[in-house]
Length: 298
Ligand code: 13P
Ligand code: SF4
Image 1 (cartoon, rainbow, N blue to C red):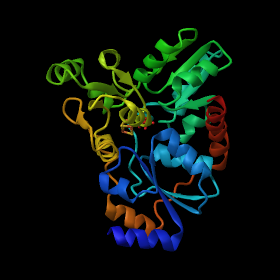
Image 2 (tube, protein in one colour):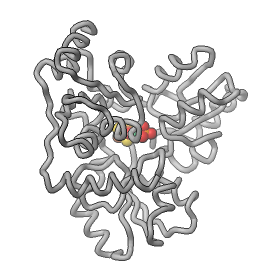
Image 3 (spheres, helix red, strand yellow):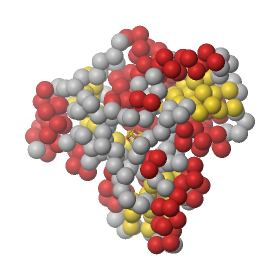
Image 4 (cartoon, helix red, strand yellow):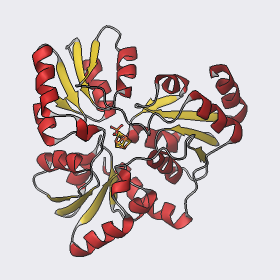
């Protein structure tokens, strides 16, 4: 399967991008693996006609918006993000009408339609810096309430209104799991993602995006790390730091949409050039402004 994928990739001049949560065998086939911000940047920079995005739909849409000239494929068309589905453009506009002086800051985990009504996007790697830089005092932050709480703490000078959304994967980490992990591994460093609940964030040693977790794991003196994010990260962490020990915080938490793409669907995607991401021109143009503003702000 791997050989066939390699052959098709070469024939078609395709580039494969994969998110850090993808299955190990998909990560091994990728030209580039990263977090949402790194993948968005890479998709815009890379020179190719065909981009196969192994991640979830909002990520492939972001790639298409930033490089509309490329053919962008998502091997499993129903690999969505339930967090992104928690904000609909009409509801966002209704909320904005009540707070006309506020700017809308949207996490990239949103649909292209929501990005189109957004002032500036952010990712978990730059959310605090983006909010710091908006030229108004009041911000509507969506859709993740936990990431919103993380930003509120770091940017106290802004008035931040949080949307009531959450990621079902990260929201499952509990305070009990952090306390128990400390008890069992008192010598370990505990790193969590900002989509985890506030009480989990407060008990952890560090809060980072997936690329931040990778960087911290590389740089820290600690030999043992406990990771509070989607379990797919453990594969890359172990591969890049074979001398260190990594554990999932509590029971491993899985994002089922991230695991939909298999070697079989990746091969079919390349062979049949499916599923192509297409978006209305008007939506893309508006959404691009909020993504480009993010890149300009950080
Ligand atoms: P990162 O940008 O940290 O990779 O997060 C993406 C995501 O979907 C987290 O659940
Ligand atoms: Fe969405 Fe959560 Fe899955 Fe990330 S881990 S893609 S936020 S459901």
